[in-house]
Image (cartoon, rainbow, N blue to C red; front, side, top):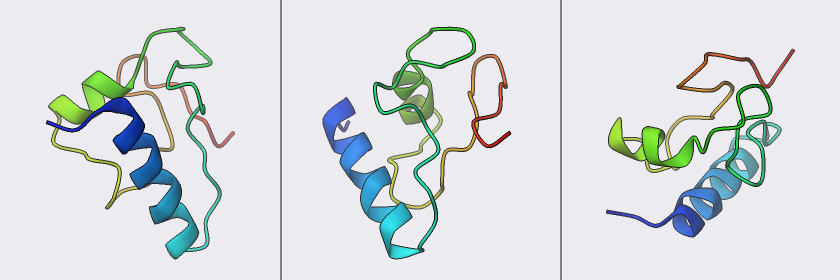
Length: 65
């Protein structure tokens, strides 16, 4: 299992590689519900290196609006 720091680093690298903004909150806490989204993303099999996080997996609030 990866750490939150590894997840954030993977997400930053992936966004840079595909030339897209880093949408998720840098703290890992949702701007909408205040919960930590990284554990939920990791549990869903996301390591931050393949998909851009554009919304909260817990409350479904969007980070790109």
